[in-house]
Image (cartoon, rainbow, N blue to C red; front, side, top):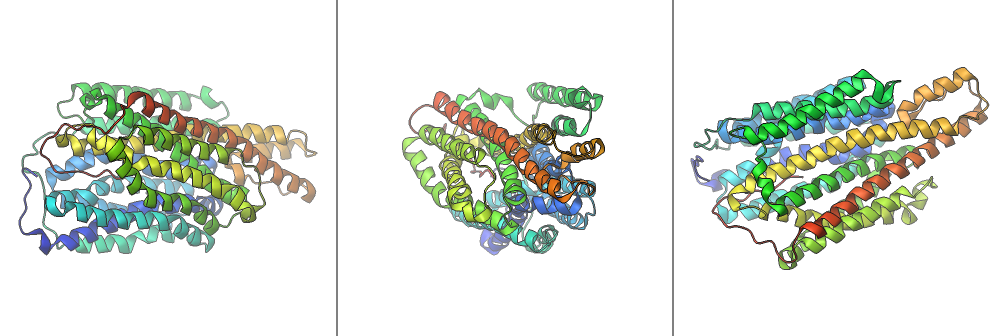
Amino acid sequence: MDGDRLPQPVDRYGKWILTASISAAAMAFIDVSALHVALPTIQADLKSTAAQLLWILNSYALMLASLLLVAGALGDRFGRKRVFVIGIAIFVIASIACGLAPTSRSLIFARTVQGIGAAVMVPGSLSLIIALFPTSTQGRAIGIWSASTALVSVAGPLLGGLMADAGLWRFLFYLNVPLGLVALAALTQVPESKNDTADAEIDYRGATLATIGLAGITYGFLSVPELEAGFADPQVWLSLIIGSFSLIYFVYWQTICKYPMVPLHLFKSKVFSATNIVTFLLYGAMSIFSFFLSLNLVQIQGYEAREAGLAFLPFAILVVILSPLAGRLSDKYGPRTLLTIGPIIAGLGIYWVSVIGVTNGISDVWTTFFPSTLVFGIGISLTVAPLTTTVMTALPNHYAGTASGVNNAVSRTAGVLAIAIMGGLAIVLFEQFFAMRVADLQITAAEHSQLIQNSSQMAETKIPSSINRDVRQEIQQEIKWAFIDMNRITMQICAALAILSGLISWYFLEPGPIKQTSSRSQPSVPVH
């Protein structure tokens, strides 16, 4: 790579680069795949409201989405190893704080700092491989990295379930400490690498606007169910106005900034624009699907956390097994067909989940959640590799790194906005359905008022102790069915988003393989 310092042959430190990159990536992957399954246990232990539970996810994703592109530029300019080390250190310290968090608010704060560390760390996981490995061995190095991270992704839900069942969900965060120390130790054997020609300014204003915009919209939507006036409350509409204005100004700023965080001229490519729209819709749907499926399995269906983790395994294993095949088919026949039928199949799997009511627990899994998540997994498996390849080949080679970074930011932003908007809607829907279901119960006005107030915790709604046992059991059933009513609408919206992404692929993509404009460059691999 032009301008990079390569002080010695890569065979002296190649194994150390891979050790550091894989260890760091494992931290980020585990914190996503394992945490979803542990969320019900975290909510029960910390007495979190549903909105706080959404913030535990979104505070991390918000920082990652907002700062990812800027952090990559920092590595190119100030040294990839130096920035990578800083990111790992922040991530590890924040992970310890997450594990020690005594309240939901303290966990949200620690997750915010952890997200900052992840944004600084994630680009370095692959940038050192791209920068320091020669082109002839990059493919093998990236293959080792990909296989290792895929294994972590598959094992994550099961690990999260086992830890949660044992009451050790905090160790999911403590596990990052040895992984981080291994990465830092390996990096002592790796030379610094940076682009000596990188004299471009870093778009700090763009990063600030993106963060304020996403935070404002997230805060606004997640505050709606917790405030009596709802959307009429000044906290809500002011937050939404500030967030929306910041994002609009961000887009404008990108058109006039000399060194924009997101070069908008790239979106003149119809293929690049279409695939990023598909990414936004599909990854948004996936975020909501994973979040509410975890809560449904544990809190409503009565699965143990480890059993919920096993329910996610078909999806993860299918992605690992079928993605290479889908990639080869896309290379040979073009991505249009796969990017059409894959999201549609995934959408049908989500719709199937939406019509499942209260089951008899794990004994019914083979006729309910197993086949539906299998269909979802098949759809995603047919989509991920062609989608990534199409994004990377839609532009000339010298834009590969930028294309990867933009697409990663789009996928992360999709998750943030989906959790905020759909999460806030889900809480409101649950409260409304629950209020209708308990309206005619034989309880006092004070008990009814307390019950409605507690419903902000959704499936963890606390029942006043003064209510007699028979009515309590009836209320517990109504809580489950109110969640199912809410889940049906939420999942069907997600299914519609997935199917819409497939139709967009069919409309905007041409048949046959994508023809890339050639240009000499180093490759880049996106990390979803």
